[in-house]
Amino acid sequence: MRRVLIIALGALAGAALAGHAVLAQSSHAPHPAVPGGTMQHPHPMGMTATREPAQAGQDAFGAIAEIVGMLDAIPRTDWSRVDLERLRQHLIDMNEVVLRSAVNQVAVPGGLAMEVTGTGRTERAIRAMVVPHAAELDRMPAYAAKVETIPGGVRLTVTATDPGDGTTVARLRGLGFVGLLTEGGHHRPHHLAMARGDRLHAH
Image (cartoon, rainbow, N blue to C red; front, side, top):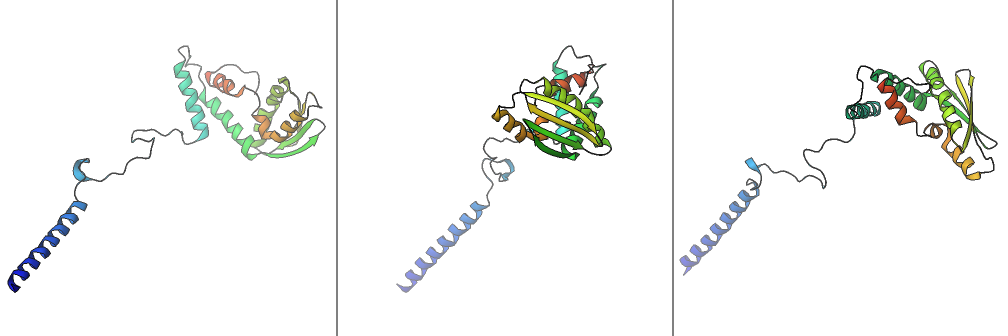
C-alpha cells in the first residue's frame, strides 16, 4: 500500500512539472500570426506602417513645397519664369518681422498705433512688408490705416472706419500688430504669384 501511494505521488509530481514546462514554452513560442515568431505590437488606432508624416518639418519649407505642388497642378505654369528663391527671400522677411522685430503699441482714439523696429535685415524686412500691408489694410472696409517711416522701422496706425463701433475697435486692439498682419486674403495668392514670376506692385 505504501509503495502504491509513493508511485501515485510521483506520477502527480511528474504531471505538474510537465505542465509547467509546457506553459513556459508556450509563453516564448512564436506568435502564430507573425512570420519568424517576432511579437509585434498593434499600431495605434488610425495609424498604419505606411502612413506619411503630415508636416514637412519646417514652416518655410512646407510653404514652398505646397507652392511647388500647386505649380505642378497648373498645366499653364511657365517654368522658365518660376522664381522660388524670390519666395524664399520673402518668407525670410516674414520670419524677421514676426519673430525678430520689436513692437511698441499704444491705444489711440478708435484704434492702435504701433512702432515696429529692428536692425539690419529685420529693419529692411519691416519696411518691405509693413508699408504695402498698410495699403492692404486701408482697402478693407472696416479699417483706416497709415504708415510712416521712423528710425529703425515704421509707425503703423490702424483705426476703425467707424470709431463708434466698439466691437471693431476692441478686435483691432486685441489683434495687435501681429494679428493685423494676418488680415486680408492676399497672402496666399501673393505667394503663388511671386513664385510664378509675376510682376508685383507691392508687398
